[in-house]
Length: 439
Ligand code: AVJ
Ligand code: FE
Image (cartoon, rainbow, N blue to C red; front, side, top):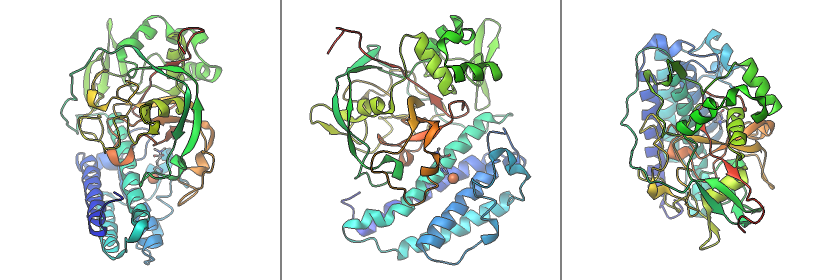
């Protein structure tokens, strides 16, 4: 990006905006109006709220703040302010209907394309000047993933279709070893990195082992079969209280069918695929599984070191495979497939340490609370990340099959409550070497 001319950068941003809007359209045009305004789960907004919210943020951040233009719909600011209304209350609001919401986001987008034409992108700070547009692309893609999670929660006939993910896998050693030492975490140079990924800073990480691939349904079934959900020994106090309260017995969307398990996936019911990474588990379930397996969840620092550190140069890469933007052979991203690929896929996306599928397939729970890096500065708004910092949120890394490449990189940090299961989250385990095991 840094090498692009002003015209090429403008064309790149325009193409990303258009590509992203096609995804939002697919997610909202694939169901009827009744489905769009309905609440599919108290955990989620109606799809029509996400659509208009995307337009509202774009109006606030680009049309008004960057463009200095007059408000288009000042009357609806409050309706689409995520801090004003909890998701469960949004269906009761006087929201724009489907046709109005589509008109509104189209009107905003026309003004944004005009603004992009008029905004000077010049000199060495060209990417900085385009940042607000890149942030809006990421914001819309994040809501597209949220809408995809709403699709997974909806009942009725399937609305979305996609090819199955690649099934060619390699048999890997179960774990990789990552030698201790310093590495550079976070970034000060990644053009579209959000405030919470900044700045780059040195971190020391001790020796550790990391699972080569995310924990699979087959592995997770062994935990269930061993009575993992019945034994408080494996669970934290908060985790066990949640397991009891929510009567957890298996990942969300799994159902017992005689002596086997099935799962519901975007309207299809199918046997649980054992080779596929487990998805729709909470942090608490991930932590309990890890304890049962004699391991633990990786810290966020360990995860990023495994994903980015290249021992041959001592540098941190943008992605596990290097500095090139994600291509389909690297990772399962972007809703090209509606499920994770089997563990051991994506040889071309392997990290220098040998771990696979760190990017794409499933978000990975880490052991770490969502906190600012040393030197953090909120940008452009405190509301993007700063107001969420603290022990109530856990960090997730790596992105899922539903995450777009524009909203995912080696430094990207996601966060959620440790009880959340509707997001496309799985995990892998880590462990500290036993005395004398290696060094
Ligand atoms: C980064 C995924 C936690 O969806 O709540 C969307 C992103 N921020 N609108 C979320 C976000 C404002 C955020 N996550
Ligand atoms: Fe938002």
